[in-house]
Length: 382
Image (spheres, rainbow, N blue to C red):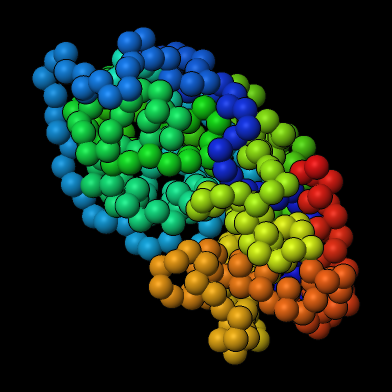
């Protein structure tokens, strides 16, 4: 049985309420950091379907670069930090040494002008950053290929509000102005952050290097970690606890329709295939087995994937959950509904939940852990 940590469900879908985040304005970097408060892009003249705005000065077209590698795991962010100045290697080392911190990643950031509106932009390494985004975005190869080709990606809300169209070029105004192609849109899962570019593009626009920081710390005391982050990166920094209610994806007692964009939605949708099975049970198993897809490699017993199926069991219960023509033990869109199928066949939807969990892992301690964690999720998301 895998060791597990009791913590809030670290799933990043579209936040229920997008709260303003201060990001250093790229236009004033040379004279010291200025800040802009923005919760949504402020479109002055944005009209859906309007032609891209013409450049006001000579522009540069960003060249292509290497394509990103395939997604291997997901890293649910627990904190978003916006620093008043670039995070130093020493500060990053302090953050990495805080209790329960497993992963950290820095990003360049700044406020930019796009299609007559103002937006907050992150410049990222597509290969590393994709694991930190919501599941539906992280598994969308087209978005990350676009970023690797120095195109830009926006949140779904920004695409609608500013009338942006994939494949069209737009002027992005920072310290300099670039004509850059929009590569797509998706859920970015970070409050107040609505545009992504690659780091090469970010440098050319003039974003501030390394002032954004994401922290993954499964099992951490979130209040204690927040204090530790503030001491590590400075009191002037904004420390955003992504588990606070206003940043959680909205939930629905009914299974969501369409392709899920987060593990939370995936658990909900899969549970809907087994009347009587709660999504919280799948979430508890997903956390214990792989930390929601974080650790998908083979266990000592040979179990694989986000729901840790044995290959022999998968041959009997594996499903093609996303309709791509194959049942992939490593694909969460297949593995989570397969777990629901297995639990259902073992009696989970017919009043034999404990027996079904026992069938999943022959340990009473495991059964108790799943039930306790499922109850915690039910309280957290009620």
